[in-house]
Length: 402
Image 1 (cartoon, one colour):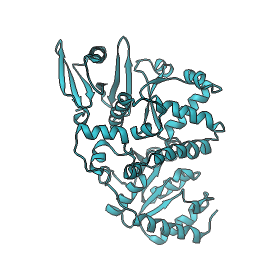
Image 2 (cartoon, rainbow, N blue to C red):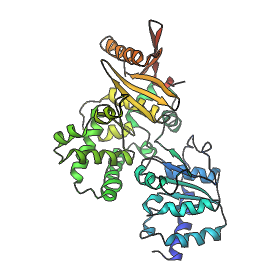
Image 3 (cartoon, rainbow, N blue to C red):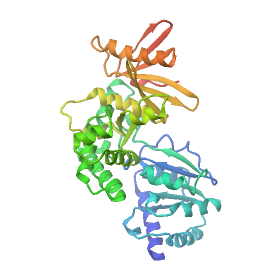
Image 4 (cartoon, helix red, strand yellow):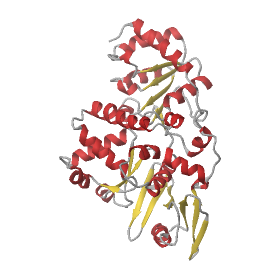
């Protein structure tokens, strides 16, 4: 429980501090996202991807008179449900109708207060860095009353704008190496991404979920980040890392996915059961995070490049699989209408790998009865045709699914 004066001072101090910050590179979503009085706007994503800056941009561009409160402020430790009554009084005195809440999911029963303010006609924007904690409440008290937007680290286009680079294959090579975390790109100090990984494991997972065996969690995380683009399974990693039970590994997977560090994509199958039991491919939220924290002694450019293509697809599409029957294809992409595209990834197409890459894509196209497929490379452009079917070889910086 907090005193009214502490809450009032924290509100004023936070907004003052926020307004002093550099507004940064304007994210593409700032002017596009709908803010409605009937629905809360939920902006979620990994720590340090720019959510607070995004809020600042929305405050300065669209809602300069909004109330802002970051619930992870140490001055708000001990905030509980009864303190929402005091916050309500301060909101009434302010007379504004727009509320910005940063990391509100750390407060128990926050969704009750948000639902009340929505019913009173307030416009509410919420950010959070834990998808699971947000979704638990969104699925109960806020069902049908929220719009969710994921915020990723900088896209390739944003990366180029931030660093004043042309859209080119040379810039793609830099992006593969550095990734898109804004704070890291300002200094390129690797310890920033090392510390971010530690914060995610300790604060977002170990403390929130009561994980006692932090060492096993750390070992598993480093293994995954070193093996992006490869299939992984709970049973395989239980044995390899000597973790007590397969169920523990799967729990760690869910925690790592909830804090946005990894994505696990299933093998395509028309059988839901087979999707569940087959190994999943793992991808990281950021290739710079892989560069900084991988234990691999090689550059692994091919798999980091594949990770980059995955992230480009995942920004727009949630339903992505890998294909593995007689041949393998990296990505099968669906949208609400159904199958959208099959995509193969090859950093550099050569005489040594051409047959393998093309056969995997031809195989997926035949399986799904598609006339067209995409092969994404660093800088090569070409096409191949067979039986009225066509593979487009596209450089990453020109790749886009119609």
